Length: 233
Image 1 (cartoon, one colour):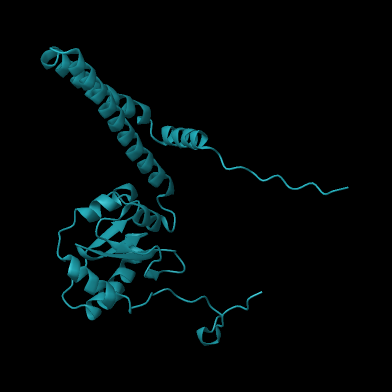
Image 2: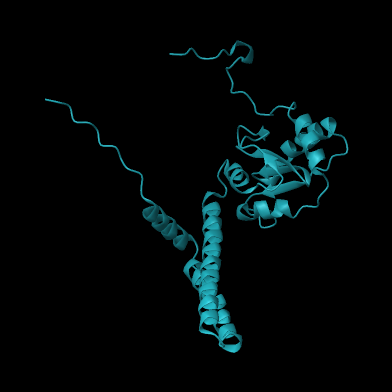
């Protein structure tokens, strides 16, 4: 008898994926649906009022403005829902190791270069420091308890200052403390930092930092001088 081939599980379709995102977001954000409805109704009501007051002289004009109003209301509603869904997703992973990497790699784009790998890690607490370079200089992002990660930040600031004297090194703290930056607001906080570098200077800074390496400890029992690449099968 011929052996039965194992069934390959199909990935959920687009509609099912959207429904899953909706359920997860609505569970985390109680005002998710209300925000979307208001974002649709408000511009629709304003557009309708404007049409009644100023554009009733022609049926074609009324039709075109009606279509424009509905499309604008729909786009605004989708934009609001998308932002709140993203925020809810970031809130779910807040406090987990590597959460900062997930945010800066998916949302931090405009003029900033970064890596999903931290530049320094505490092997015991899993606290980490991430580095991104952009218009605000060399931005260090501390992930973890402020008291524990403080020394990692100071060490990284000294390392960067030696490589690039006079460079601006702002620090953003991301943890559960009320005074720190919340994970969902990380990208917005970085974009608001004062501009100190031009595009040409950013390129030069990136090249200098490329040779610094990462301050990530090697697990005990491993001799780095004896590490060899694995054999190919």
